[in-house]
Image: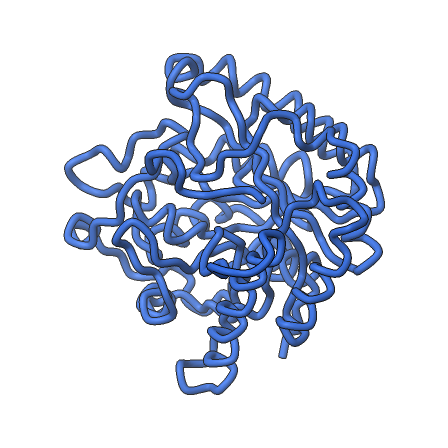
Amino acid sequence: MQTYADIPNPHYPVRDDWLARHTEDALEPALPIVDPHHHLWDRDGHRYFLDELLEDLNTGHNIVATMFMECGAMYRNTGPENDRCLGETEFVNGVAALSASGLYGDTQICAGIVGGVDLRLGDNVTPILERHIAIADGRFRGIRQVSAWHDDPAARGSLASPPPGILADSNFRSGVKTLTRLGLTFDAYMYHTQLAEMLDLARAVPETSMILNHVGGVIGIGPYADKRDEEFAKWRRHMTEIAALDNVSVKLGGLGMRVFGFGFGDRPHPPTSDELAQAWRPYIETCIELFGAERCMFESNFPVDKGTCSYAVIWNAFKRIASGASADEKQALFETTARRVYRLSSA
């Protein structure tokens, strides 16, 4: 199984008092948004459950639905090792059921669930996936298995600690093919130094719908801290090749993580949405240019990116970046791409 939190936390801590130093009203508050990437957890003294998520959702933006993204939360403490991941789906489906009661607002919280499993089980992963599907009661949409690996500890920025090269593993690829047979998607998170591995996987399994997380995971710390222009050029070349494959979509977000190297979380005051938009625009606009709005979706990546800015501010930043888009493009970027890729209803 992939493991989490067995290395020092590489992310900025969430500091509510620090975030309170800058607030903004929501721009375009009526614009419907599907947030296709957030977590729920209780780790390292930080809890982000339904109550905390609701506080963020109720800050002025029109969040109509959300997608839960696996993060190793609430795995079972007993039972067969490969089955323990089912605990996360049980937990999240309970949160989705609370939301579906209507007692906590109109947002369809956790309308879709992306869970975790070790795809290196190959064909043997089938019964575990079938149990995920059954537990989620129609909400299970896919699997994410993080492959972010770098040989230099100073360049790492993920709580997951996978071995190198798992995307090329033959058993792993058999597991990905099993996702396709069950109508499930594959979410991928890796560093930009591994994008050639993503390209090879997407070419090898073209029938699988794949979602590349966090604009391809550009490292801007450690040995890459002073090489932004050079690494941007490398990243763009790889993303151009990946964009040519129509089975890959990309999530526009995650740039608030420390690994990107923008350093906003190190400042005495949190950034404005305009500052974020200026810093993030080259990556996000490049993705939209290469993939098209119909294969791009904005994501909050909360609570991870909450170490850099508030929920109101992050969506304002995205809206500033998309300000020149057409109405149809905006609808795709903020809602319909996520609905289509993850098969969410518009109830």
